[in-house]
Length: 472
Image 1 (cartoon, rainbow, N blue to C red):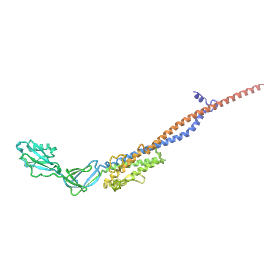
Image 2: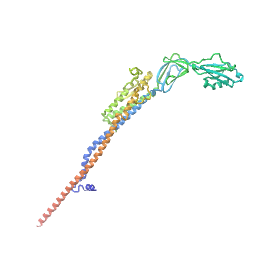
Image 3: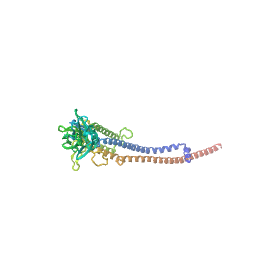
Image 4: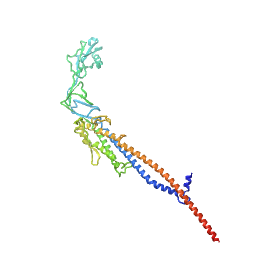
């Protein structure tokens, strides 16, 4: 209340608005200090925004590299086959690109027995039940024939196929019928059949005997009990239809459209990163919030250099990792060899023709370059990871909570908090200064008022004295 009365009374003695004068003096002292602190806050907040923009660009770049860092990213394969009538090719996601010479010299087949000629309406063993005995690999199984017609035989044998591995068919030859018993493919499934019925007999020799398929892949001999070969090449199933004429040339190449799209995404992500760096480093940039915010920042320059080296660097995977000999990708060991290069303005670009040529000529080496033939490696793994896998690891390091980039962001945030605290302290000091000025000016005003009163009193006294003298 006293303070309010004091302020409202200011100027009463001197006629000067000392309150406004005090506030002007305080503002003159506050303004430059506040402006300096506000400028620091604005600049530091711009840095925080700049670091955020940089992190976003790096994150997008890491996402693009992730689409190229696993061998399975290249696993959508296109098969070319010079002898499609002899061999069929099917692949799954675990298949690896490659080129193979495949020669089939023998197909797998099953043992097949045929019966004597059977007249229409025949009933075996005078209608009495009897057994057929199948011996497969030394194991004999008796199948009871209770319905003694040819059709009954087929039904009874096929009911036990899961046990014997033998199936039955009844063939109409036109004038009569023949029973045919067929086993499973492969030499180990050869079998014999005997009949307890004297009027159901079999040819002296099997119509055909079981045998394995014989083939070679890149001059490596392979034996298969089946004409479906699914273990010779990982992720590849070979269907053998007939023997080949010499060697069939089979190539498994990555399906180019998916890889091309992923490469283009990498190009786009890198160029966005590059543009972001230019804006952050341009003091004259007109981009709001973070344009020029990191101009001259050594960390920005370091990150720019590291990211560029992720594209321009090379990678070779060696079979002998100690002596660094026997390179697995001697022909394709750098990104420029698959069409990734920089133009004169620094923009990353993709030569799709060069990419297609690399895939066509050295498909496995392209996969090795980017992935080191690995899948699902942790960012903390020390195994070879290829060009893309290594980039993912380095970018992860840049984006971690313990990274220098995060540390700089944290430090900048702390500075903003300190600057804001300085503003509060400045306001407190200016409030105290205003109170002091008001008290001082109140005292001065009081002195001036007292002096004015004394002057008026003395003037009146003198005037009174003069008047009394004048009347005399």
